[in-house]
Image 1 (cartoon, rainbow, N blue to C red):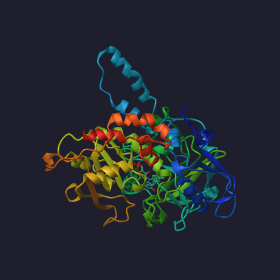
Image 2 (cartoon, protein in one colour):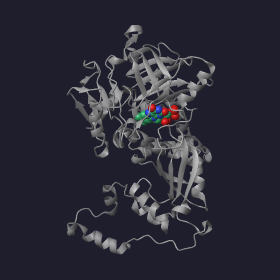
Image 3 (cartoon, protein in one colour):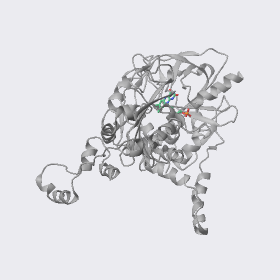
Image 4 (cartoon, rainbow, N blue to C red):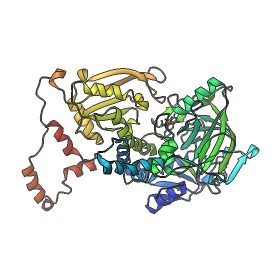
Length: 516
Ligand SMILES: Cc1cc2nc3c(=O)[nH]c(=O)nc-3n(C[C@H](O)[C@H](O)[C@H](O)COP(=O)(O)O)c2cc1C
């Protein structure tokens, strides 16, 4: 059964024993962040938290509880998408993309359920009053200060909405976009919208600004978990995130009309902030903000949102997250994207076997890629292709390895990569767009990239020395020791278990084959 509301997601998390309710009074300013940060640093990502007694900046008790770290473990991230594990979602996409028409009538008929399934995904606009409009604030009733919006870190520019679905529409083609962009509270009815220049919402705004037209924008908070995740997914601008969410949850997302602007919103949202941006107004200062790099992002200029209505369920839960020094909850959201987008990446770069963005690389800083190398120079071909793909263009360091290196085992990937490279020969620098949050590049959003070819080198690539064999015990000896291991009383002796305990995925046998 798909999860249709945030409350259903929270209930499912509680049933799974992964929710902690906090009744102690906790301030939305700094205290909530400090508790959430400590929990997110626990092994596996810690529990999801429901703060039931949140103290607002004016000292009053919040009317609404705050949920945080809902997506912050592998299990909860999979639950959010209604899957056993994240690779299963990738497998569904692979199946969907594999649309070669099979031989014979029976084969063709077997495609029907798959094709019919696709037709079930588009979002549906519901009539009647949606749950997210049970309560409506308009005019002087609007006061964002009544919402338990967190100020996360001591030097943040103010309170921030951190887990939003920001909805806008492409003014030319009418295609909707939903992006997760932090939003700073500037006043009771004003916000600053931090969509970075490479993002789709920012592109919509540039087009509206060129036309000198007011841009309607909606910030929805808390909905079915697949929709919340989809806001963070780097989909091409032509794909509606709510269609993607429908595919993920195998059931369409219900939408409703916003009350004061021409946009649709998830009908099951907890809280919806409706508003507009006026391109004739000057930009406003946004930030600083303790960011997911683990450093403060400097203040910069972003568009101001004027709030025209706040609507909500009768008893809404305010959904939030924090970012900061990794690992944090956003690692799991990003990891879901990594797994789900692998088949899509393979469509254009078919030699890719797997890839992984470790938490300490905060997505764009470090990407390990394993490839099925079939010709000399292929590692460089893959680097160039990756730097040409959507937000992967922002990747700062790419490390390309052979197919059987388990790149999801970071220790294994580093170990093989560092052994395999002659730095002067195998490292290449390129230039390109750089993530807005990168504080080291020579210019804002522009700088260099490093590609490392850590594959085994071929004679055609000028390598004429012998490539060494990997050390491995023979099977007969391993078998005999397996038999006596338990009697020796030396603890776990399964080699793959050892990898797992030290942070790897336990797939070390796999890369032996690469060296055969
Ligand atoms: C918790 C979290 C916060 C984020 N904050 C921002 C942000 O403030 N600005 C931004 O441009 N992207 C932010 N992102 C990344 C975008 O959500 C992501 O790049 C997404 O693909 C953007 O959607 P779009 O491709 O439709 O533009 C954040 C992601 C997460 C998970």
